[in-house]
Image (tube, rainbow, N blue to C red):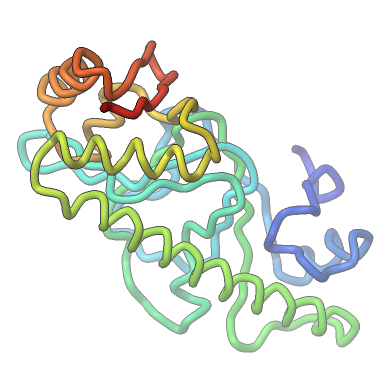
Length: 222
């Protein structure tokens, strides 16, 4: 995407904003599109952000690395997710960890302070974007609580079963593809990759699951 006219206006951020008004409203918000390659850092942990950031295309994750280089995935962002909105709430917090592009990403960065210098005809649409932003943040908070429910399980087996069960619910089928490689899944569940692979192998031998790479099927065990 090279300009706002190529931006997908059916994104949740623009709900209720007339399609033809989106490029003009974004100009009022001093918006810009920023592209990132896979593996590129979108934000560095500890940085204070002055603009809102919205993920238009691609996927990203919030990753923390300890002193010894061990990585933990703290949060995940799909297309249509809010990455940064501290300034929207009048906060001055820094990013708690690095935000990394999981694949090719495009973010929309814009100013959304309490008072925005914009033409009067844009203000009604800007207020709609503010309302959409607040709604999405509430939804993302619910998703984070759901994720914490999975991580609250103590054993690797319990975490894996909870994660796969949730993926089946989200996909509406007991056969589905997960969005993670083995290492990414281990980082997301806060377990060792070897322990994860061992547990997946056990579950397959027991007939609870069958899988090939990222493709999984859950089975009832009598």
